[in-house]
Length: 280
Ligand code: SAM
Image 1 (cartoon, protein in one colour):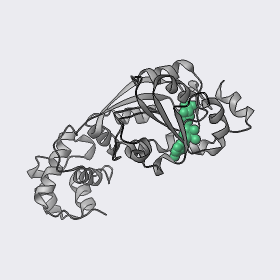
Image 2 (cartoon, protein in one colour):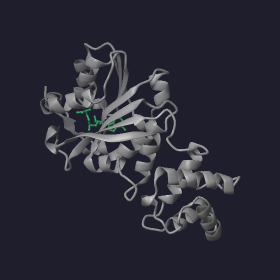
Image 3 (cartoon, helix red, strand yellow):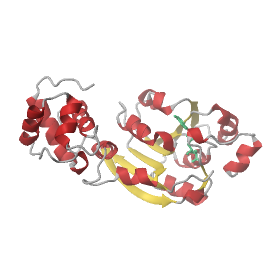
Image 4 (cartoon, protein in one colour):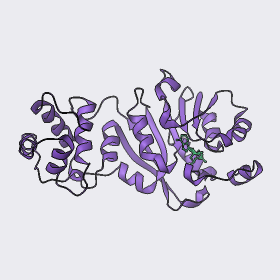
């Protein structure tokens, strides 16, 4: 049943504040699930089942589906629709407050979700930085976010560096706004991120790497030396010295650096500042 009719039957109106744009196109649902390459034994974590349309397709392909929904109003719809699938667990709560490792357990898992757009970046970070990372993520996101995830040096952002440090993102397909109800203002895309076993660059540790990257992106349109000095509470002189040792021109801007260049900065940061001052 299409989401509009289903919600009307239960007298529920979609909440824009929760990013509730429901997929009603069977081809789009199938394309999303197909691009996850699920095997019969797989565990899937879904975020925001809504009326359960994607969940139901996932249930046909996976051994276990765990789905986390924040909106309790949808409980009767989800209970009724997913009742035939004993291997689907519906959990009510905020994904950003959920300990994914504890919820999923030790088995490998795949994330498939049509994510609420107001917290897309936060969800991606939450999953990629979790103690137990997924093997891959297949996410329906705004087209603009999809382009940012696969950006190349020249257009990099904190989100791009983070996604490309943890995995290999690619755009699978574009979805027009018309496949959702209510229709969002923007087009969307399905993105797949294959998560690496270990980062593709040599860094002292994740924390040092991201401390440097976050500082670098903390001040838009500034030269990197200023953003890094301010963000890490270093003198201008020490910052220039450090950047030159890492082979990075201090006048560069954060969006132009490659992953390897960020890694070189992080390595030299750790070497130059044996006890690096904690960034605030
Ligand atoms: N999966 C459904 C579909 O494809 O039609 C619904 C997708 S809708 C874009 C996003 C869903 O995420 C909504 O059901 C919304 O209530 C839920 N949601 C919003 N914020 C959430 C959060 N912080 N944690 C879990 N679910 C959330």
